[in-house]
Amino acid sequence: MTFMQLSILVPMVVVWQRRKHFPPPVKLLSWYVYISAFFVISARLAAIYLHNNLYFLTGFNVTKMLLFAAVYRLVLTSPRMRRVLTIATVVALCTVAGALAFGAAQALPVSRVVQCALLAGFALAYLEQLLNRADNRRLSQDSLGLLSLGQLIYSATTVSVFSLEVAIQDSWPVFHLFSDIFMASAGLALNYFLTLAFLRATPDIPAPAAVAVAGGRLVVS
Image 1 (cartoon, rainbow, N blue to C red):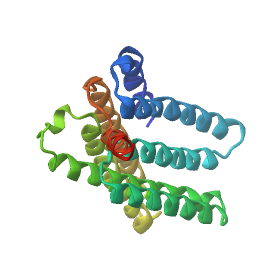
Image 2 (cartoon, rainbow, N blue to C red):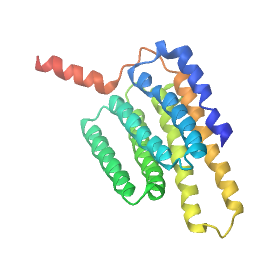
Image 3 (cartoon, one colour):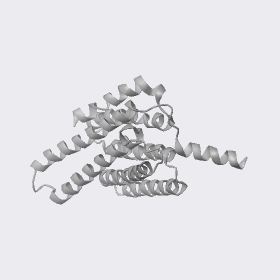
Image 4 (cartoon, rainbow, N blue to C red):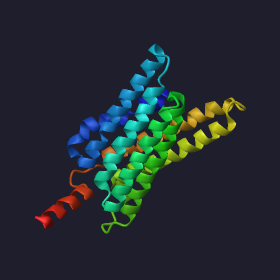
């Protein structure tokens, strides 16, 4: 798990080297490396000095949802899909806020599952849009497509492991070792695709939603 958390340094270095080449959505996405590093350090320190880092872990899930919602809002071209994205994000945040009323221990698993479900929905929406684009841009060359693929792998693995943890609980202690391995693998997969997204970002790719809005303003004017 420590190795997985330290792996965020790899996309962080790529961001430092290539940020000037990023289109607006990828520039916004690049903040994820700093947010991730901040919460990793904060959660470690809180576990040592406060003996409770649940609020920091929940905060990371909430912040990640907000950031990814903002990123996908820039690249989804369908106004209907952007409205659905906004509504789903509000519902997700309200769900986590409701869970917090019952305590941090209850809010953390809820925020984890809600985050995975929400971001998997964003990823599927973008991949569907990518497949229907006229320019047939390859997934391997599309930064947000690569991010979406990594997020789907991360979400599927995380929810699967979490479901098994709830079902098995303490009846098979060795499972917790394997769950840590799978969770670490999911995090490494996400960071790998995130690194590819930063490496293959090019400045000549506009944000489709922003272009659509600008076009609408030109027509109105």
